[in-house]
Length: 269
DNA sequence: ATGGTTGAGCGTCAA
Image (tube, rainbow, N blue to C red; front, side):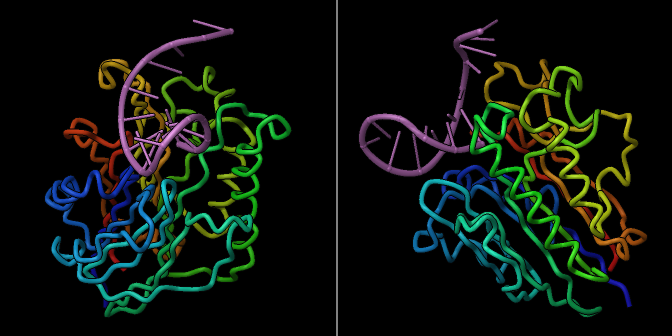
């Protein structure tokens, strides 16, 4: 038995500010599950009734004051999984994993918000860059120990554009945090612990693909200096079931937009 | 080389 499953991921950059835009995402993509990052809301202040009002009666969130924060909204019943470590022992609300209860069996879903890493791509000079590399390395080690990973999906703002055409100018960005060789090598090693890139599955590696455009451009569409920082990976047993991908570029022109746009994948599981 | 913008929440830090 197979079922269709649509999973969307979006760095919403403040859930409370952009709650109305979630309706637009739902209208455009009709996802079964929505994974959010940078909710920037402590758990006690999370709008607990909002998911059900939007048509997503099952939800989980993990937030803190001011920074970070992740949430999962679902049409399918879910159980929060308590299997992963507190990454880098920071307690900083960058990961939430759940089991989605599907008729065909559970799907293990991981929602990540990887540290951005600051400005200076130097471990010694910039502790935030060191934290980012350590976070990715720790996640790689953890997934490497998961033998025979199956029916698993990993999404999120991974804050790294791994391929040459995941950035607007490869050579210029080799020294810019998000596209440095240690980061791209680290992210690739992480993905290779049992996952395939579900979006690049449909789009050849020589085609430009972005999910984020900086606020610091007066005309983001004209300058088009984007990066692909948001990702959806599926365990290899799910790759043959991949049906389609959508990067909702129009969302960058919504009123008071996030600097990231939603990414969605449909698959048969 | 620098600055450009946004959000949280009231200083400035993080992105």
